[in-house]
Length: 328
Image (cartoon, rainbow, N blue to C red; front, side, top):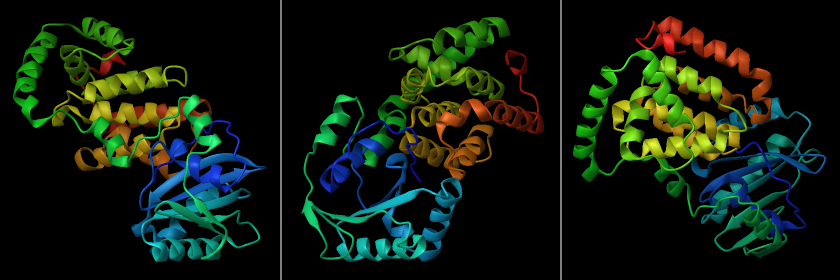
């Protein structure tokens, strides 16, 4: 589930505006997706996206809605199904209506190809087109990539042709770090954490090596805030472009946390999916999964920060100390 939690203040005047602004709220143009917008007093509190085919199973849809309902028990949900299959789109939307009840439901909209229709099959309709709200979102700097796959490419790692060269770089930089003490390693990581541009390959390799130690992941996590989250997203995307598979979990987890704090739930979810494949039981994927399951918005980070950091520290204690434990 992709959940961009921090929503900008955009004016949505009609259904054309609503359909046009969705790609900017979730970060990409949805395909075969169910998008849920949670409104309270006319304000969008949250926008969530899931793949349409899996959620067409009534049990999966009920579980999805229950998680949102527990977090926003009085909010008004709007459901938008994006699909080339009109019958599938309306089948899912009809189940949404049954789950929520018409007394609480906002609107349901099927977006099929280049047109939309609302409320019921054959209901009010219109063409999908650029809208004033979409233009406003673009002016606010909100990205809308062409697809989720384009977003996933940010964390795909190095091309096959670059791997042999990177193996040599990792070996050389690991040897360099082996000759440094804990204080020197911490100084190097401090320098890298403050970088606000694309890292050189050698610096990206250094960062990946340094945060392969879970205790240093905790150190970086302790410094993460809403103020530096955008910079940290750029940093860890840069690192992942060079990170070989054994060194991906740390950068993926830290990128996922930074993405969550910026409200980029789609990127956070992509990081979590990658972590599930290579390090599902690590402290950072466990934390990301907890945030995702509870639909916790990033503006509650300051409220939960101490408890969550303690939980990560406890996780490290359970799995055992690391050689860099005194860095934290």
